[in-house]
Image (cartoon, rainbow over all chains, first blue to last red):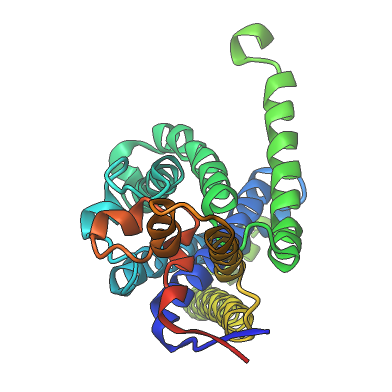
Length: 186
Length: 129
């Protein structure tokens, strides 16, 4: 059996672990966010809001660790531009770029919560819906590029949180598609 | 004096204590919300640390035991390249197969090697146990 000294790979392992944690936390944040608008979370909105906010901030922190720890990887040795600017990295350019776009979208849409009074609550809510799209991009990035994407433990742990989030997202989309428009109701 | 006036008068006479009661109730309610918020935030932080630690442990054990998907794929590829090299009698192809993505010292090659970005590191310390 091949045995490997893990010491030289600590940055790489850290990046992988942080990426997995970020995906799981983001999926939970999407679940809680969708529950907030639904019937299930009607009586528990304040708690769900705090949970959603905390999960989103934890996701952003994990994503920062995911990207920044790669800077210390002795083999890949990417530059700050490689991990922060889409289409700059030569490593799996498409998947890496999708991940970078997902991160920036999540960061902007997530942190804009603290400026929603300035943006306007209605406009902010409309913009915030795109966070689900960023989450899907992140999911595509992890499955397309993730080293552990083919592993059973990874797929099982991701499915536990991703499947409910996808179901809730579909339910929300269906509900908003079938709900009468304000103009039509009049 | 009518009943309503009497009632109003009674209410007016206890108003200061009522107000302080309401204030105490509101402040205890606010404190409860604050406590609940803190508890939720702490739980989420704990969950995040637990998820990261669990993922780190799994990946670490996987890598240390030689079951890392990237390193295994790389080792298989290299073994394949070596066997091809030994069976071919040509001269030019052996250099390419032997060095692969990792023999090159240029930084560019490390980024153009697909799955080997992680696996590429295996060129450093992969040993037989």
